[in-house]
Image (cartoon, rainbow, N blue to C red; front, side, top):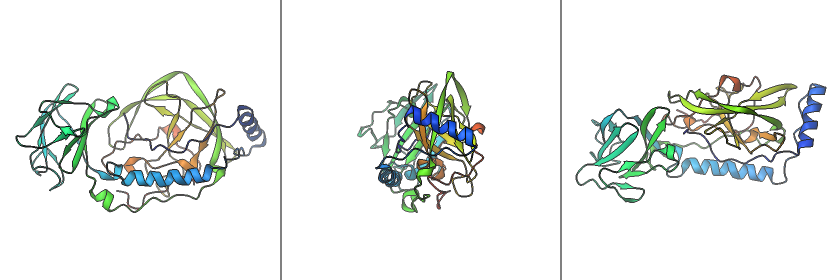
Amino acid sequence: MRDSRSPGPRAASPRPAALALLLALAAACGGPAAPPPPPADWQPGLEKWRAEREAGLKRPGGWLSLVGLWWLEPGATAFGSDPALPIAFPPGTAPARAGSLVLVGDAVTLRLEPGAALTVNGAPAVDGATLAPDATGKPDVVTAGRISFTVIRRGDRIGVRAKDPEGPGVAQFRGLSWYPPDPAWRVPARFERAAVPKQVTVPSAGGVDQPMWALGVARFVLDGREHTLIPLGGSPDEKELFFVFKDRTTGEETYGAGRFLDADAPGPDGGFVLDFNAAYSPPCAFTPYATCPLPPRENALDVAIRAGEKKYAGGH
C-alpha cells in the first residue's frame, strides 16, 4: 500500500502505426517526436481534473486534513487528546482518553475507555474489535470527536494516521499552481513490459521502505534524446501505469521529492501517451504525515519538465 495516486485525466494511446512512425522519425532526425493531436476535449478535461484535484485535497478526509502519524509498537498504545498519551490528537479534537490500540503480530485491536463514544465506519464501536488496515483496500475508519483515524501498513511497520476536517492544513491551504496547458507535453511513448516483473524496495518520504513492483520500462523522446521511466505498481499484473519521477525543475519549480504521473494501459504494441500536463505533487508536498514513494534513481530525467503541477507555496 502507498500514498500516491490522484485519479487524473488519462491520455488516450495513439494508434500503433502512428506511434511507431513518430518514434522512428524522432530517431532518424535527432529531434523530438511531434505529439499526436490532442482530442478536442483534452484541455477542458484537463482543467476539470485540475479543479477536482484541488477540491479533493480540501474535502473532509483529504490529504490536507492529516494531523498525525504514529507507528505502533507491540502491545497497547493509548490514544486521545491528552498530550501525555503516546498517540496525542490535537487538543480539544477528541476525548482526552478515548481508548487503546493493541498490536499483536499484524493485528490491531481496539480497546475502549469506559464511556468513550467512538464509532467504527459510522456504527458504535465494539470493544475488542479488530481493525482492518489500509492494505486490505477497505480500512476501518474510527471516529473520536472530530478525529477520524485508520490503521496503515507500510512494509513491515504498522501505524495509525489521523485526520481532522478542521485542521490547520485545510484552513491554511493556499491553492495549487500549474504550468499552462501545453499539448506539446503530450509525449508518445512505448512501454516494454518485463517478462518477469521485479519486486523492488522503494524508499518513502516518511522514512519507511515500501515493496513495489517494477513493471518494465517506458521509452520516449524529448529534446532529441531518448529517455526512459520505470512504472511502479502495487501488483505485478497492473495494466495502468504509475510513474514517480524527478527532473530538472525538481526542488526549484516543482516539489523537491519529485512528482507522480498516471497513464492508461498501453495498446497491444505498447504504445501510449505520457501527458506531463497531468503530473502532480505527491501527498507529502502538503503534509509530513504521508508516506510517499520516492523516485527510483532510474527515473531522474535530465530535462526540465515544465508541465503539470508546480511547487506548493504552503509546503511544509
